[in-house]
Image (cartoon, rainbow, N blue to C red):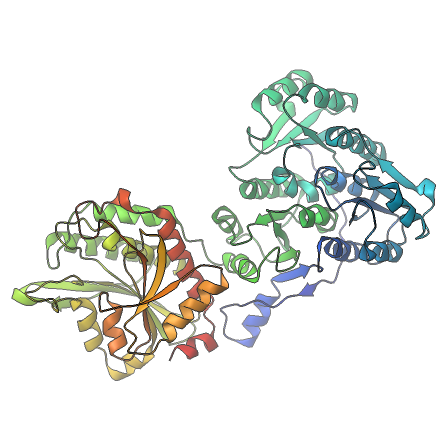
Length: 608
């Protein structure tokens, strides 16, 4: 609806360490440069660090809001943009030492205080006076509640704008989620932010009209700011051309849509995008003025992961990041995920579940049968579509039947190989959705997302034939993996640094890593380490010899089996695609994706 320009200033920020998969010193240095941090020991120190970085030479004004509640801070970015100020945080009864020191360092003439006595007491204002700020230059902006305060901050912002654009934002007053990411945009435009809620629609609209606002952007979906409010606003402002909405299914997708809005309407870029937690408000509220000066948007992450919608948005779009807040807000593995998402798509569980359905639809897949063969054809076609060269190995079974292994390889920067394997056959009469279309699906989705990714290890994908019992005795099984390992030359065997069997990963309450316990356990330990790093519970169990990792482990290759358990319909006709739990498939795929992409040369060497 509008476009503005704004000058940027330079700021020095600190580079933080990050686990990255590149092997050379130059590559590691380049990757580290993709991630900066502005943080302190708490939200008050973080806000101070951001303010000093934004205005290293001082500023004429400061915006002060409580760090104990979010509503008054929502309009702070717009006001800060109008007066070229940073946002600092305080408590009700005292001004933290870091905030006092920053005010003194910035040496402002005016301090704008957002909220009434219940938010920031007069006693705290007296502390600010002692810093050398005249009482007349401490300007409190407050109303009887959060909605009235937001309207008064909006009015003050418009008075200070100079040339108002006639545009404003409206967000819900019930929670902070959808308001978090608008800060950089509001600071860049100085367009005010209003709060609304059912029962307060008329008052909000009256404030908007009284301020001369002609165009409004609603933040969040209809659950946040209802369509009925949008309809009332359209009636008052002259129809739908004057009211639009930026909203996604979650706070995370809303943030990426706001970023696209900022790029499209304001000329924001993606050279060093801001990152903050979406589960708290303080760091996101403080960073708006800083990012506005640099014309960069803010995206949100969860404390345990980068949501898939955000990873998709980052992929091949974002050059680098500035993280706001310490490791308790944005943990190191989440930072790593953000950097990795630049060059690698996320693990898409819907794609994986599509593979589960396609393979299980073939019915029971006994070794050497036509259904197993059709499954192998499907797997080979998928791998070729991803750009792989596919090879096969014939597997000989008792009774003169044959099966096969299907093999594809992603070349890494190192010759050391990680094998990701999954067996294709099922125990008749089971359609084998969990055992083991789920494992094949994870392997295929990993092959897709790694196809164009820079990786350190060479990754070999193997769909094994004849894992289930295919003969007269209980030992007539694992034919595909046994014959594959036995056919390896000594040099080829020595190149395999580790092997993971992905088997039965679609149902259960406990995520397990398993091994025979007779060979090197470094692959098990490595997976346990990755799981611990990302906060995923992974339980070790000894394996009596039930999956394709066995043949590798017996040959001295570090090996592990990933599975979920227990499955009550194991080897029955009820093991259908609808039985598979997408959440289990997703956890498995994400763990292996991070394990491979985070595999440095030193970590790879530790496996053998």
